Each structure stands twice: as C-alpha cells, then as structure tokens.
Length: 128
Image 1 (tube, one colour):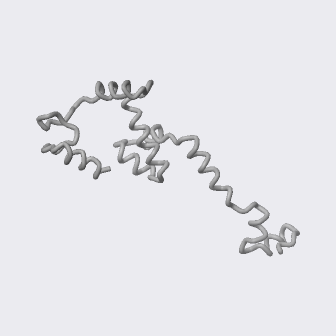
Image 2 (cartoon, rainbow, N blue to C red):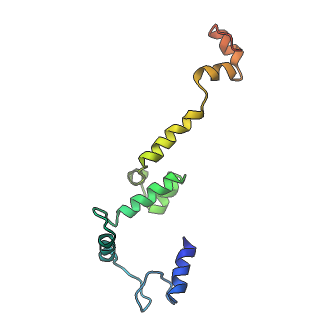
Image 3 (tube, rainbow, N blue to C red):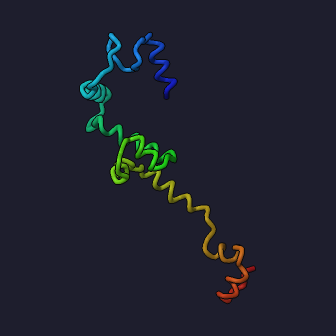
C-alpha cells in the first residue's frame, strides 16, 4: 500500500509530505463532505466514513492479525472496544468452522492415538 501512495505522489509531482493535500501542499483536515460525495457518485447508500474502521479491523482479523495488533492499530485502550470493531464475515466464520472437517472422528482418535490399546482396553474395544 505504501508503494501505491508513493506512486500517487510521484505522478502528481507532490512536494508535500502528505499524499492527500491541497494545491499548496497543506494537509486536509476534513474529508467527510468529499467522502459523502464519493459515496453518492459510487451509488453507495447507508455507508458512513466510520464504517471504514470496521472494515479495516474485520479484514485484519480475517487475514490472521491478532486482536492485540488490531487494538494497537485502532488506538483502543480497552480490548472490549476492539471487539466491537472486529466483526467477521459469515463466510469467514463458516470457513473457520470448516477447519474442523479434516479432524478424525472420535472413534479414529481412540483407535489411532498413542494410547489406543490402553484406551481400547478401558472401553472394552479392540483398538486394531
């Protein structure tokens, strides 16, 4: 992402330290009106600037970032607040549950585990 932003600066011949700035190189302090206009032009309804934080946090978690890292990136003092932001998509939740599909069944675990004969003897079954 940093490379993309550097490319934007290079193409626009920006002399400012800021990527998003006015023609004098001064940073923008307020972007809500521009964001609202961009959403309207894109046909997005019921989408707020703050929704970007939720998306950022959720995508980080879905890509494997720790909740502690997300907490620090969002600047939260309390993990409870981070948990409110770290919503997971239904697809990601389903994929997480499906990770269990490759586990052996309980019977296979008893019959093939390191103590299979011992467990089998306690259960009065033949572990082989």
